[in-house]
Image (cartoon, rainbow, N blue to C red; front, side):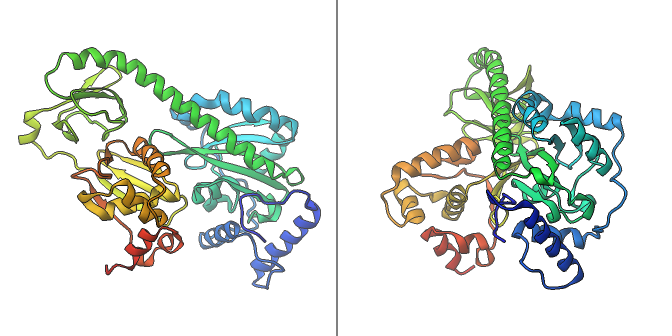
Length: 424
């Protein structure tokens, strides 16, 4: 079977395909040779759940957390702010197509469930209810739990589910992230009877997630605009460079320095270093923090250092930024290659022509490259500097072992291959 997110091709005979999957399921559990191999993501998931001791004959539904805990998780979840967008995109479709739409938190606990009443009743018997935890380690291969592990959209059909009681179902799930930090917030899933599976459901769910993430970003920008009205007068009254940032380090206003998108997350009483300002002692203001040069921070406690770790052999690759907290930035293959090259270049950095040759083998992709670097700098804020392009000074960088890296082996960038070939 071919690898891919969609569990079925358009026009496939669903009954025949379900029977084939049942034979694959039975063969793999008994140690026989299956008629065809499972899809790669399904095979990976089955390996994981078998190692965790999940039974394919799991009987009782998973125990649900208490209703008061569900309500607390709802109240504290950022996804509560985008429920209207998700409902507008998916609930009416779910009701018309005999599905339920569910939203989980990052642990796979179902927080909201809406859709066709008859399907909700069937889901109750399966334990697919608010408060239930649908992680792989509890209920086996399923779109929610597998999407959490894979970090990518997943569609599971019929006997691709590890637990037999779920074979009558199909489910399509997509992780949703905080666009400010890259933090996983949860999963959006559409589930229904197996015969309702359709390849277009993947695009539908992923589009709904993208719209919700865009809404979260717009809400973030609205809060920054409000903070800007407070920050501008504050900055006008100080001598020297300074900036006003929100609780996540996103910059609302600057004065006396080059613009920045983001800094390390401020914490009361913990000095931090800001490029262009120096050591700062965060000062709380309504909705955020004022950061300005502080002589006492230079001679007092140690300033929090920032660290950048590139994780290339995960899907997708990501940049993990550690300061006073941790930010996770999913990376495209090209952005991961750029960061790898710049990290290896050190403070000498690379200009656009050098990067173009390292990425494409020639110096003719300058316009494309500068656009990519602009997007990457917006993502990473002050960590990435220009003229030349380089990782900011004082940032500790941790790179993977390129000799053993599948990412380096798959890369088409000449510069990445040259790095992997260098003596370690």
